[in-house]
Image (cartoon, rainbow, N blue to C red):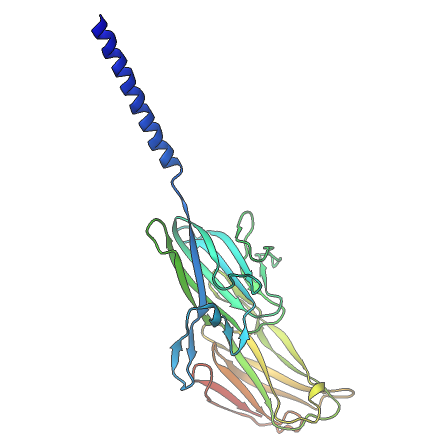
Length: 315
């Protein structure tokens, strides 16, 4: 009898140890991490060397400027690669201490990060109803009921973008470099005559793309728009140049442009219409000629630009 009681006691203790071991294993499984920190380093894509040769720019915060002008806003949208669902959004401003190198908390699994860096004025995320999608700057924000579908601004300036596939999990990389490529064309107006004493503004009327689709990372429908430059401060000067940045489809586009040189009173000095002006991403189209003493003919030629090609229009 005593032997039987001892065997029963030993069996009970053994079961207790087995039970505790099983509980510990379950506990470890419950706290297994399902997220990881991933540092995203944004930099410029292809640029042009002083010798005119295309080259890949360095991936660093110092690269987040273009032609000596700093970019001011970065948008990063985190999508689930499998379902296509938008998970979270970061709008980072240049005031952030980790600008262009944010640390994102990503779920384990496959992601697609879509990134746009810009210095456009008043850049804004819109939802499908063309209503502002609110996001607090410099805070990674989860997406719930509605989501942003496009990026727009009150005035387009230099803008870059790219998308990157990222795999997150144990043993995966914790730093991702993304090379951003230019999404805009540059339109330059080069006046070769003297600005008169009563000049006021120069206006350009054209078809312009105002929004970028996050789904396609391409522009949305073009609309009629007018760009205006106050030129009163240039009175009496000559050889003045103005630059305009325009969101451009991947394949480029053409638009008629009507350029008017306005005066303080009375009819404009000139109203010049140029048909089918070509605009391409990362290329400069230059309009050159006398804006105030204008002859009616013009011609286009190819000239060196950002990527060693371009369009010149003489008026």
